Amino acid sequence: MSDTTERPFLSRGALLLILLAFAIFWFAPLDYRHLVPSDEGRYAEMAREMFVTNDWITPRYNGYKYFEKPPLQTWANALSFAWFGIGAWQARLYTALSAFAGILLLGYTGTRVFNRSTGFFAALVLASAPYWFLMGHFDTLDMGLSFWMEASLCTLLLAQRAQVPPGHARFWMWACWASMALAVLSKGLIGVILPGAVLVLYTLLARDWALWRRLYLGSGIVIFFLIATPWFVLVEQRNPGFLNFFFIVQQFERYLTPAQNRPGPPYYFIPVLLVGFLPWLSLTWQSVRHAWRLQRQNNGFSPVLLLIVWIAFIFIFFSISHSKLLSYVLPVAPAIALLIGIYLPHVERAQLTRHLIGYAVLLVVCCFAALALLRAGDPRTPNELYRAYLVWLYAALVVGLAVVGFALIRLRASRTGATGPALVIFAAAWCLLLNIAGNGYEVFAVQRSGAPLAPAVKAALAKMPADAPFYSVKMLDHTIPFYVGHTTIMVESADELGYGVSVEPRKWIPSVSEWITRWRADPAALALMSPDTYRDLAAQGVPMTLIARDLRRVIVEKPAP
Image (cartoon, rainbow, N blue to C red; front, side, top):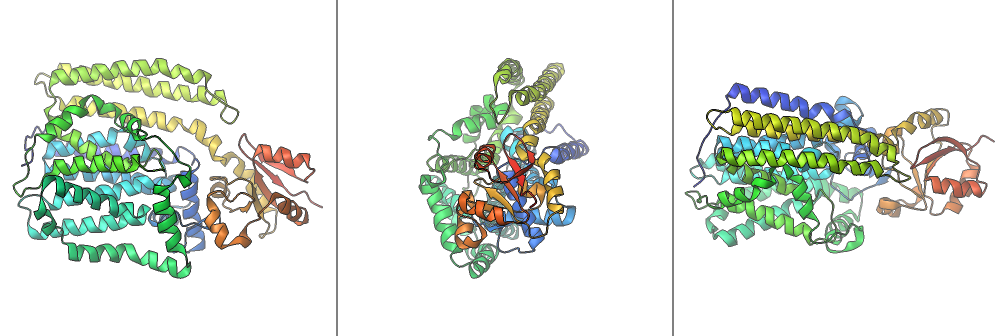
């Protein structure tokens, strides 16, 4: 049986106003920051190339076939470019929509499976969690994957409610199978392997064998394959060998071997989740204890146990992988938020007071710790950038501290001892803090993006023949092709475009010496390289006219004869 305690404190009108304000707050900053390497530049450029070439089957990156990931997000971004034009906010739109929809879906699921208060507070926790908030504003694949995996989890929970009409249960289970298919199209086999493994483990632990009779396996599998299969068939027909590269190299070898050079210790994701749910850490243990005591539903299904198995298995699965990135365990975030949301309606006034005071102290400590940025920096990221960002960081911390203080005042002024308004204000404090600090990253992003170089490069290209080559010498820049609107020819180093180079070797130049010969013969050409490579080539007497440079890249033009 689920927890049915209700403590409503917001009218429907107030809730809609909060939702509207939050939507504006969520989407307004999407165009403020420049796209940064590598993920943002890569996935924006892949979508731009799909849009301009009108090839929706074979993904390309920098002009080379690129099969490391399925195409769902590239499709979505390309459609965004088609509808709204090419730009940074359009490239982030699908990610931001996925994160925003994930918050709404979690609120709806918590309301239907548990109660209205649980749904509201679960959405509140997810919206203010740094992990979900910040990842929702960067163009990466993991947010889209996490949304569709969350949809798989939530629709399963909705389908397995006690006394749900058969027609409704079938609808939600079909939605679950469809969500897993879309998760596969987002990032591969983990979209179905992880939910499937969680379901098996849950069944073994709960001994809930009857669950399998309510999964609509036959029709569900048909729906799954109808959605997930066509693209894989079409792309293999057009690109023989794709299936082996995608499933064996990119799925199994990436997980089982250190080939991707993304190592990390087994505890890699512990600090990720601690920081990712920092605003709610002091309530997490109590949340798990409270949820664990809830009884099963009348049909024997335990939503809480499924949530715990979901979190534990996905965390362990990626912790033992040979390839680790900060965003890999993002799919556990909605389940964690729902567990905390179950408990928040029961937080007492004294406990919340201690919670708010503790976080006020933490923010003060962070103000002193931030002074370390005064000494940070290196040749690629100078100290003055860190000092400029420190202004944003202090603004974020001061605003956060002020709003947390307001939450504390509001709590103490409450005559009824209701904790709901203070929790909303506390969550708003973290959303404001994250928004200010996240937008402040533009201090670094504008330099990392290479966008300031784009006008000079476009002007140079405009004076050249349409077929003039643009070389990328010993480096792959993840943002210049997008901001310039032009792909480059790889020289000597294929970087992550190795597969594309292997199937289309005529599109690259295998050595710098061969490039120099070709460069001298070109009537007009551009080349992108690192400052070190530029110095080496200049010392060799290679003819080059500098047209743009920054601390990370140099762009040169072939001098006129």
